[in-house]
Every structure is written in C-alpha cells, then in structure tokens.
Image (cartoon, rainbow, N blue to C red):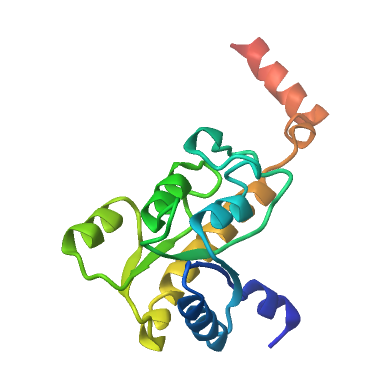
Length: 185
C-alpha cells in the first residue's frame, strides 16, 4: 500500500469513558482495528480536547466554535453515556450544536439497556448505541460511519480545491467579452 493511500485511510477515534477498565478495553479494540485512538477520562476532557470549552471554565456558557488554537482531526467519537459532570448525551448535544464538529459521527456506549435513553441518543444524532462490554463485532460497525465521513470531507476539500481564484475568472479576455456583451444589449 502506498504511503499516500495509507495516510488517507487512517482514522482517528476519540474514546471517552470514566472507567479505566472500559477505556482500556475500547482502546485495545479500536487499535486492533487499526484506528488511531485518543482516550480521555471525562466528557469535560473530551470537550477540552475538541476545543469546545475554555480550560478554566467548563460550564455550558463557555461553548466556543473557535478551534484555531487547538485543531485536531477526529473522525469519530465513541463515548460512555453515564459520566459525572458532562454525560455522553451532553457531549453528543454539544458536538451536534457545533458548526465545526456536527458532522463527526458520535457513538454512545452504556452498560444500561434503557430503550428511552437509546432512542433519545439516536434521535439527537448518535450513529450507534452499543451495550457494554463493547465487543469487536460492535467496533466493526464503525467503519461505514468513518468511510462516509471521510468521503464527505474529501468531497468538500475537492470542491474547495476546484474553485478558481477570482483573478482567473476575471481574466482580461473574459472581462472584454463580458463588456462586449453588455454593449450589444
């Protein structure tokens, strides 16, 4: 595989869980699937990592979409539902409210099988809801979400790269033809 293709196909997953055992498990499963993994122990740390809160203050009034000082490309976020301070559901909502991050797929994990909780998360933008302990078969379900996100990002980048600079569009030849047409009418 060429290094260009290898770089294109690497996916970065942010894993969030307050349980060290569950963090280690999900990290191992993701790395086994060849994902680059960053693990954090709380929703607050995840928001800080994503650039969605000020480091000094973690209440909901400090949400910011300014990521210029801390830009990290994350292709998917997998988070525990039940965490102190900022729950997985809170994290999901803040990500979906962010103009910069709203397209990142979010997967929720929980040891509690509560249908209303599962439905609420899915209705508010979660791509999957996994019951713990997470297994390799669950992690295998992530690839289609990652691929769709990667294709969307590449298509947006291709559109940006195909735009011509304004100077090219207003070359002397084009300006002259436009002026000639204006005179004819």
